[in-house]
Length: 139
Length: 139
Image (cartoon, rainbow over all chains, first blue to last red; front, side, top):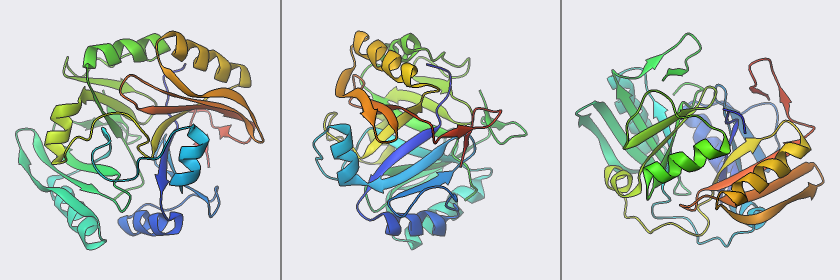
C-alpha cells in the first residue's frame, strides 16, 4: 500500500443539497462525477459525495443513521486566525451546526461544525503548521 | 474556503496500536507528531490519529462509541486489480474486519474493511481513474 490517500467518501441524504452546501462554502465541484456521485478535487485528495443508503449497502454495513460522534473529521487548515472565524461564521449562516464555537486555544484558533449529515469539520489555524509551495502541509 | 483539504482526523482507542496497524499496511508515520497525535503524510493530505475520547471532547460531541456505519470511508485507489486483492488480504491478516470481500464489479474491483476502531476503508481499482505524474487523481 503506497504512501497515498486519493479519495474520501461521504454518504449523504441529499447529494444535490450537500453539493450546494460545499459550493457555498467555497469548493467547486469537479467536471468528473455525476448527479449521484459528486467530486471535489482538493489538492491531492478528492472528496466524493454520494447516497448514504447506497454507500452503506455497497460497504456491506448496517446504517445506524447520522448524528453523534463518528470518530472522524475533515480538518480545514486555514491560513490565518481571521479565516477560522470567517469560515465558521459562513458555515453557520449556511445552516451548519456549530458543535464548538471558534475560539483561541494554546496552539492557535479552532472551531467545529457538523454539516447536514452529521459529518464533522474542524476549522483551525496554528502557527505551527507550515505549508510548501504546493499548499501541502510540511510534516 | 480554498479548494484544499490537508488533514483527516481519526479518533482511536489506542494510538500506538493504530499506528502499528497502518505501518504494517505500508504507510510510514511522519517525523512530526507525538505519541498522542500520530501523522501520516499521504500525498497532499495527512491523516492524524489521536485519542477518540479526547477528540470527542475537543469537538464538543458525545461519543456514541465505535461500530456501525458512519457514512464515511477512506478510499485507497490501487494501481492494479491485483493490488486490491493483495491489500485486502494483508488487512485481514492484520486483524481488520472485512465487511465486503474484494470482488469484481461493473467498473473494476473493490472490497471494504474496517480497522480496529470501525473506520471504514474501501480498496478499489478501476480503469477509469487516471493519475497524473504526482499520483494525484485526474478529475
